[in-house]
Image 1 (cartoon, rainbow, N blue to C red):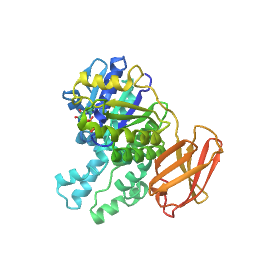
Image 2 (image 1 turned 60 degrees about the vertical axis):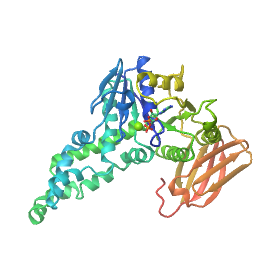
Image 3 (image 1 turned 45 degrees about the vertical axis):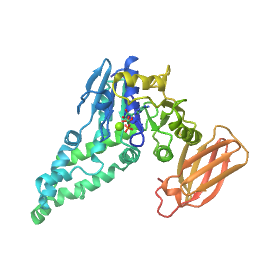
Image 4 (image 1 turned 120 degrees about the horizontal axis):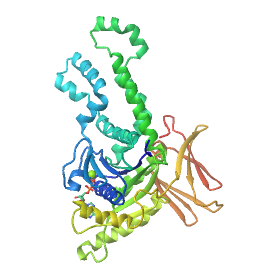
Length: 397
Ligand SMILES: Nc1ncnc2c1ncn2[C@@H]1O[C@H](COP(=O)(O)OP(=O)(O)O)[C@@H](O)[C@H]1O
Ligand SMILES: [Mg+2]
């Protein structure tokens, strides 16, 4: 079998430049000889606009070594959910829902993007490409969906309210008494297959030897804050993050009108460094016009990577994690050094600022820790452990 492909997922708030950066990365890698597929899983596709050409629900060749794909909701749901969808439709129809409405209803929230993400697993297994670049949905959505594979059981339970074994025994009786359509074995098989696909996708995306996630952001408060939150969750869920791309950085001499914007950007840059280090940061300037077509994408790619390999792992590691232990939640932070220096911890709602000498980290706490009381902090070699009282309902995420 051919070598398993490298997977790079770009995510970030809407409008920050995910599509431009994903397309530019793919175009550069392709130009340097890698067989590359760029796949848009964002419902709001703009990959075709970025390349200034039509794309489809299956990969389309754009340039030598370069293919593009904009996945399509109905195509995907049919492809991955077909059997289950027919069953769910029959249940809805039995409940008196109009057939067309029932069909629509079977696309449960999140299913569409999840189905798009399943393409990653498919391309990974087929190994036709050396590189798969994913232009993913904005931060929150992607997060929720990416963590779903761990909650695969949840999906199955909602689709199959009654266990398979119980169904075998009670099926005909239930059907006779209530008239409710019972799922056939084919539906269960499809459900199990889907569950395995989700598990597999999760394994692939959390495999630091093949996959990494890159955050795209702009130097604006709300954008940085959302990226910090995403960064926290990726670490909790174990999705390796290897690069932060700061897009639309104002160049020097932007003119009087933009001078204030430029000052503002310069103020946020240190915050970005504190928030994402040790993950490296690369910047792309704001260009004088929008990024459309291969020539502009080439400019973005050159600005971003210059001579570096766009498919490199710019960072490997997991700078922090949260574990539950003896009724406490423990946040561990990896320090780049072992220390006995004075430690200061500042908390402001969901923000945590940790300072050790001149080393400073600014992170957004996971939801489970926001209301939790800080109890103690201790160093162990190069690891700092902060203990929180576990809220009764905390699930550790
Ligand atoms: N560095 C840049 N300089 C100028 N225009 C840019 C830059 N990056 C992105 N754009 C433009 O900004 C708009 C949004 O970018 P896009 O990549 O579609 O963002 P997203 O995918 O995050 O929503 C597009 O019109 C794009 O051409
Ligand atoms: Mg986009």
